[in-house]
Amino acid sequence: MKEESFQVKYEVYSFNELPDAIQHLVSNAKEASNKAYAPYSQFYVGAAVKLQSGATYSGNNQENAAFPSGLCAERVLLNYVHANFPEDKPIALAIAAKKNTEFTKEPVTPCGSCLQVMAEFEAEWNKELDVYLYGENKVFHVKGVKHFLPFLFKSDFLVSKA
Ligand code: THU
Image (cartoon, rainbow, N blue to C red; front, side):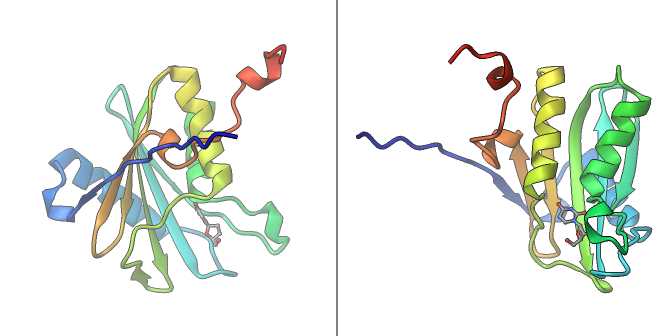
């Protein structure tokens, strides 16, 4: 037996320390949370993505009375963007969440399914996503899904002879 490990890294910023363009992207994510449809959880998540062309888009969580039919903000947004602008590479993603009327004090990290979708687009574009997670007290900057989900499921497994 031998033990192996991954090292995951992230940066911690105050909002004011972030570059202007990223402050703007985070503000878009915060604004998008205001339009979330979350009558069951009252957890209003907003996400904003910057594409290589410079265009930015935002989305939010969409819940459903049949709970599993709802979808997280990140997947609503990334699937929309990929459906409409399949040639435009996503480069940065910001996420912010409100519990009832207050933004969370700590950054909220994406769920496993959203990370898997983010990883799919990273693989397609051969470009890691710069992810910014907003909290009132601090903002995390995570450079690539591998730092969240080092054991993610990869398309290589589908074709591997192993
Ligand atoms: N949610 C997101 O939108 N993004 C995440 O990464 C985690 C959770 C949503 C799903 C659901 O509408 C609510 O937050 C509570 O789980």
